[in-house]
Image (cartoon, rainbow, N blue to C red):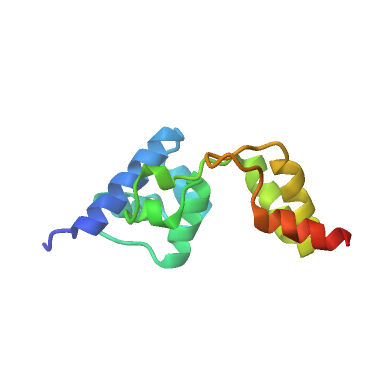
Length: 132
């Protein structure tokens, strides 16, 4: 039998670690992504590699980027969102650009970044032009 590639092994390890962090069984993950628990097991041990749609579902399920899940980046790239935050983001994406900008401005108001500035200049200028 052919040995799994390092990329498949890295993906499988990350998938297993994320699943265990969330205290989910392979069967539970399989139900969410529409696959069998054997498929999830095969992904974890590097025997099979999921298609891009399944990878996106898994990344969303665990609140990480596709890049992190597939081993293309380090843990700093992890996106830790609750299910409520995911729903809020989905809801914001349905809004007009003006409404989204105002939501962002409200959410970021008073935030000070490492460079000492408040919310990004691009957003500030966008809101300024909206009020003119």
